Length: 474
Image (cartoon, rainbow, N blue to C red; front, side, top):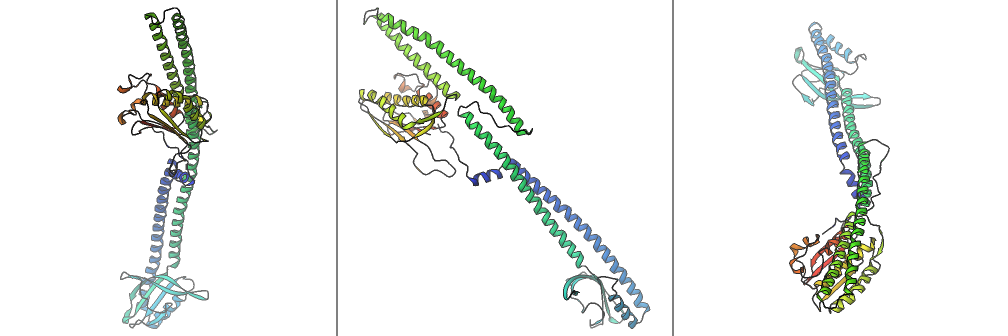
């Protein structure tokens, strides 16, 4: 019967816990969706703007080419060269590109120093870079131009500086990247903040739930002024806890009343039987009947007390206090030492000092008494019983696990319990075939299991080879 290991969250685990919260995951998903939407929108805008600007620039270049073709038909070569020079030096036409070359591609007129090597060439339009003055230095600018042939084997290039357009595209691309990064960053930040908030609320709820499970039914979940879903749920759970507390306290009252009402007639019955025993002859049939009655009354009272203690342990409504486990184990061993000596059983003990637990001394004492009583019952005459108390379990703590607390071990060399029956014997009124001739009610290990669970400990039944090994790991 193993309890869940108790974990202490490290900072890294708390951080990973935030990343694993639903609000963080939802925020990340929405951030990615918004980032993709922003990228798509800016991409469409960039494409549309580029198409409009490119079409406008190409239309201007086509118009200029058409005009020059008309002029070359009516002007002489020298006049046409002069016209090209005038237009290439015209300050009103910013960014215009002109170049006229002879059949050997030597420049004749224009503002481009040489026939360019095109970066791209679709047969009509070409893209190339050309150095243009920028203050006291020269900078390479992107040019887009259209070429056509002139009479006499001459070639003409007419285009426009498109560097500003490229700069705008680059700026939009940087803006797109910045928008996506900012969206993701805000999503991560918002998700982390929401996750941390939810995790803090869940931690507070978990802490209160732990106190409630330990038996403090007066605890309630924290409720803030906000009227959100979590606070609404917390209020409903608190209402449910109020009802559970009332029912539990009512059940405890009923148990106390039932115990009193049942003990009273049993005490009367025993007192009557003992009084009658003094009025009959020793060894007579009547005396044996009365002795049988007193024995059964004692057995009924013990069974009733065990059932009430189990109910008390399972409800968890017991007072908690620091318990010196070392002193308690030593005193229980000392109490049962005379009983074991009567049967020649050697009761050995090794009790570590300073072991402390938080819980009910009365219930822990009863659990230890049940273990020792069972060990003495099932250990043959002349056998051995070993009681060990370790202040801390052996072995290094696992990652993320709090170091284990004290461990109580009771071993005997009796018949033991088969492996497939060890869970079964923890139930109420369960007695194996080999134990039916041994006095008892079948509630001993059931009480031990309830007390162990109440204290958040781990109860383990193992083979002592021979015998039974019972471990209570706090």
